[in-house]
Image (cartoon, rainbow, N blue to C red; front, side, top):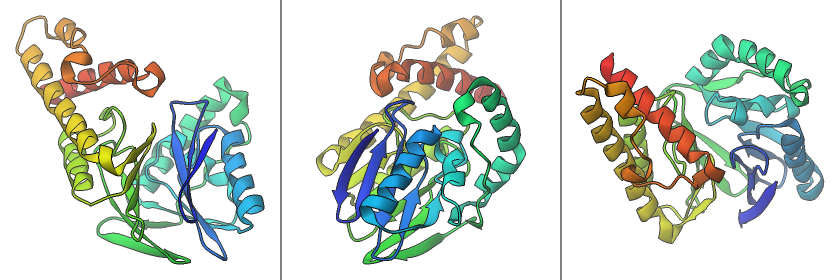
Length: 275
């Protein structure tokens, strides 16, 4: 697992095991906040070890940026912490999480220790503000990757933990293209120093404008290509032929996973257009 100190008392972690998924920590003098967990127990436990033994503070809050397993199933490894999320995150975990976890345990013995912990504190609209030492965390909605998406702004440092609202390749299979485009535009107007993507590397201030444009251009190109294919008789065949490079992205992103995600995006958008 990669770890980086991005500002005073602000840390970023990236999995070396699964899809470059990320998590974060903001620490105060008395307690810390975890922003997301990682996909496998050993990596989440390594984060807890770092907080408790290197920073010498307990974890009081865990913020789930959305309900997907690679960001929320590690809640159980922070016993006693209050979990904060969007109300739809709790609903999705209740409706889908238990069955998904049981199926995953059958496939991966490493998940046997995982127990589903639902968010304790939720919101629907507006913002939640959390003070951690000298840091002010502003939690707000950024839907599009999924309906329950939220982001966490470290106000003083202008660092945004964006969850999967911002990734090297926008992913809309469980979300909505217009919503994620709106969230990306909003992120681009926030005057940030860093974006902590839900997957992938840290985006630095000088890279943000280009990253925002590239993601918006990808979504626009994908929509145009899928709409054009949908008008043809052999639409489903043509959908599979939409190349990621033709939409302005590289298949090498996310350790080569980007090509698979792009294919799923095209199919999902086709289904949305047909419905």
